[in-house]
Every structure is written in structure tokens, then in C-alpha cells.
Amino acid sequence: MEKDVCQVSCVNRALVERVISGLPSETLLQGAAEIFKMLADPNRLRLLHALAKEEMCVCDLSELVATSASAVSHQLRLLRTARLVKYRRAGKMVYYRLDDQHIGRLLQEGLRHAEEN
Image 1 (cartoon, rainbow, N blue to C red):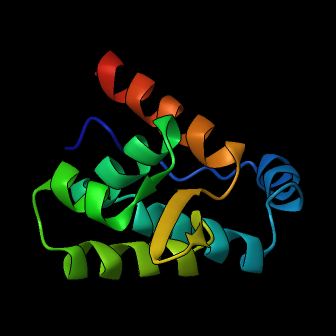
Image 2: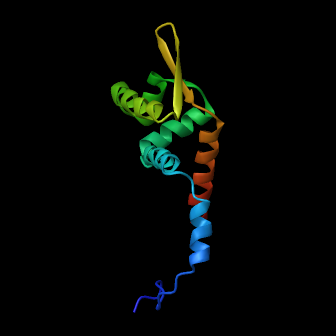
Image 3: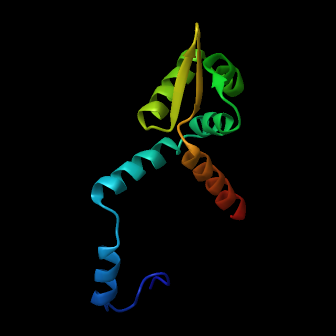
């Protein structure tokens, strides 16, 4: 018999209903799932952590993660689509930064949690 599963079925309907009424919408949950999917890749996390410290161009980010500029651009495009980063042009250069402060805090909390394990 498994130790981490109830041995009898006894649903507390009032508790379940209270929790259901407080859950975020399906759309919001799907959006959050997409963000976490983007955070599930170590190279994207490296890029995001770097951008949490400094605005950087694609060339610098490519050097940082030791991969081609086109591979970095692909990852940045994914992160931009997920609204995790944004960019600005300065002449022939393109600089990336985090989309907002929420992303930086999310990264910090993720690291804190990983350190505790």
C-alpha cells in the first residue's frame, strides 16, 4: 500500500468548493503555464538572469552562453513572444532587457527555492 495516498476516499466538498472559487481563470492559468514553459530551459534562464543584471546586445548574449547569435536570437524571440523580454534598436545594434520587474523577482524566487532543496 502506498504511504503518500489516502487509504480511504473522503472528499471535503465545502473545502473543494472554497478552493475552486478562488482559482484563477483558465486563461490566466494557461498564460502562467506558458511563462513557466519558457523558464524550463537552462539557456533561456541564463539569458534572463543576465538580462536581469544588465541590458545586453545579441552579440554579448551569444558570447555569454557560448552559442551562435542566430541560436540566441531564436531564444530571445521565444522570450519576447512570451513577454519576458523586450528590445530596443540603437543604430545597427539591438539591446534586450527584461520586460518588467516581475520577471526578475520570479527568477530570484526560483533560485531561492532551488537553493533550499
